[in-house]
Structures are given as C-alpha cells and as structure tokens.
Amino acid sequence: MLHSGDLPTGLEEITSPATLRTVTADELSSALPGADVLLVWDFLSDAVRPAWPAADALRWVHTASAGVDRVAFPELLESEVVLTNSRGVFDVPMAEYVLGLVLAFAKDLPGTLRRQDRRRWEHRETERVAGRSAVVVGSGPIGRAVGRVLAAAGLRVELVGRVERDGDPEFGTVHAAGALDGLLPVADFLVLAAPLTEQTRGMIDAAALARMKPTARLINVSRGPLVVTEDLIAALADGRLAGAALDVFESEPLAESSPLWELAGVIVSPHMSGDVLGWRDELAALFADNLDRYRSGRPLRNVVDKARGYVTTDSATPDSVTTDSVTTETATPDSGSTA
Image (cartoon, rainbow, N blue to C red; front, side, top):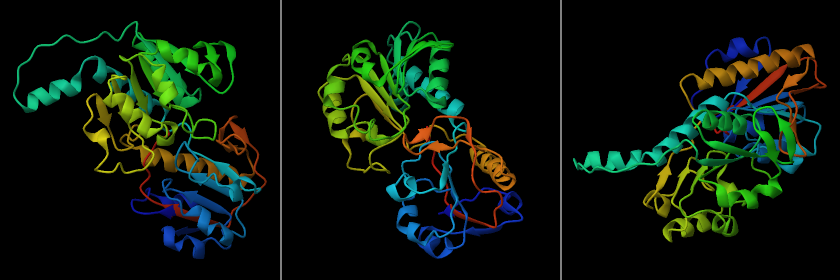
C-alpha cells in the first residue's frame, strides 16, 4: 500500500490473511517484488511508474481515486495487470459541491462574505438559478450525479459524453464530445466532470472560451489539465468570462504566485470537492470488497478499460484467484475525484 500519511483504519483486518506492507514512495521499489496486489492509497503520487520494473508478480492495481491518470503509464497499460479505481465513492459529494458553487455564483456568496469581513452593508440583487443552462462534460457516474442535482435545482442540463446516445432515461440525449462547441454559447455554467485522457487534455482552451458567453462561469472538479490555464486567466482578466470555480489545477498545490488567487470572480479550492466526512472509510470498504472478490475469483468492481482510461462496465473477471501479498502505497488521498 503506497502512502504518505494517514492510513485507513482496520487495514490488517481488511487484508488478512494476506501479507500487508505499507510503504512510502521511496520504499515502493523494494516492497514490490513478490506482491500481487498494489493499493495506491496516495493517488496523487507518481511513484508507481519508476518502481514498476520491480513489479515481478503484480496482477492487480487499485487506486483510491476515480481518475487513473497518475497510474495510466504505458508499461502498466500494456501489461496484463488489472487496473481498478474507486468509482462511486465521490459521485454525490462532488455533485453537492458543484451545486454549492453554482449557488455561490448566482447569489454572490463570496461578495457577501467579503463585505461582512469589512462590516459593509451593501444591498444587491442576485441571479436566479432556475431556468439557467448547465453543460456538464462527462457522462460517467460523477457527471450524471452533477446533472441530476442541478436539474433538481431547476437548471436545464445538457450532458456531454464520448459518443452520442439518444433515449437516456434522465437526460434524453447525451451529446457526443464533438457537439460541445455548439453547446458552449448557451451555457450559463460549464461543469467539467470528465476523466483526463488524451482526448480531453486541454479541451477548454482559448477557442473554447471564446465561444462562451461573457456572463458564463466555468466549474472544474475533474482534472486541472482539461483547461489551458493561461487561456483561462486571459479570458477572466479581460472580462470575457464572468467567473471560474476551480478545485483542480494543472499543477497542485496552486502556486502562491498564480493570478487565479486574486482574479475577480474566481473561487479556488484545494482538490476537495469529493472529500466528505467518512470518505476514507468508504474507499477502504470498496477495496475490501474488491479484495474479497479477487480472492474468490469473482468479477472485480470498477475495472478500468485501459484503452479508454476509465471504467466502461460495472465489472470484469480477473485472472487471479488468491492473493498472498498486498503492497499498499498509502497516503492521505485527495479526491477527486475525481471526481
């Protein structure tokens, strides 16, 4: 288990009777030989790839996050090792967080708090949420949860996925990624909840931002590299975009010198949109269930399609039947996330 700090409780009970080794990034290479399962508890760590040559028995890697971009390096992707993620843990918390951000923008809650700090009484009018348009990019569990919550608040939701699908029971049509350009001009809120892949990296650039209304707001709770940061800063500084709520960034933590800290209309949070009380226990419980499935040869939950970079089905059958050694690279995970 790869970690850098806080560990989930009850690890020995979860992994028993397997041999459990908890290691930090610099210890991973020496611990991997002989291990057939790796739990990447510190999903922000890049330690797995350099340690990969020492993995002589790995059959399954599980990451304590929804996104798998940190472990989706060619050597793992081209191997027979099964990769699973923590899909399902963060859906509702992230959807609630996005709704909070939408309301914060519409009701100018940051402005109210700033005035309160200065003891300044200044009456203003705020915006309606009902009837506004939200374009949600990402049709997986997180994106769908976001769409449901926003629709319940009265927003008109357009959901964008990889391919177009008609007859969706909740959203009618799920738009293909290629339709995003045509949806941007009508979006009052653009919510990014898509996985980081080669197709989504840099998808919100200067050209995309230029298609958006100057009154629109961008909300990113997925992965920072979906947005070209310099282009976003320029659009915000020039008044071509009304605001942005950013929970993820191209480089984390966000540098103190970044203009995003002080730009008007920007809400910065430290990769926390899915982190609610008890989330670590939920992550551990999901891994425990999968470990039980692994031992008994049953289909694992959340098997990642390594060609696409995300889970496309609810399960897949692993080759392994028993586990003798579990190595966990553990750290206090920051969600995400992912969302």
